[in-house]
Image (cartoon, rainbow, N blue to C red; front, side, top):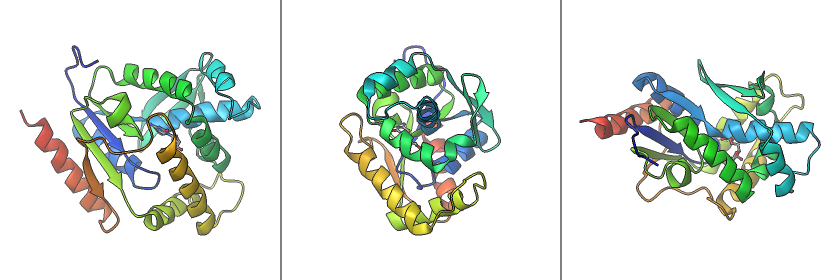
Length: 231
Ligand code: DC
């Protein structure tokens, strides 16, 4: 897979609410790399499945959908603009129904296989910060830098709540407890699915951001990347 790749791949994995997106966007800006948010791809597919009224537990239905779907990630100021079959769905895919559906859709091994193939193609030239759950273990196991970003569930829940609360497109008002419960259910599914469950790669550098400020996480990560990129 690494044949001919010149520029590095920075893999950022970890559970929801750990701060991966902020970190990935920062590192991409800092090092001039492309930022690829793989969760947005699962979200876009899940949104299309909801729209088509498909059964999220049916691997066959979802795989058939994959085959007629194009998902593009374009660089935007903080993260990615997400194009589903050419249509901008960047905001809609952050809604609660899509969040839950993406988690369900992502357990299917053949859906994951399709996603991983897309993600490898997107990152093939290197020069990317790729963020997700299985980048360092399945998508780019030979990534030059692997960071596994984690934090205690309560801290992740309250960060996620603040993020959701600021997302004014959300139709239904949410509570912090509801966000925490939903996040724990997703964590459970992500960590226990049969294919490429969420776990740190053996050679990943772990950062626990529970007691760290954002600036501390960014500074530590920058240092890790600099050390690895040093000739
Ligand atoms: O990072 P996120 O919350 O946008 O991810 C949405 C869902 O997609 C999440 O429930 C887990 C899944 N996902 C995955 O299984 N593998 C990835 N590489 C990225 C996301």
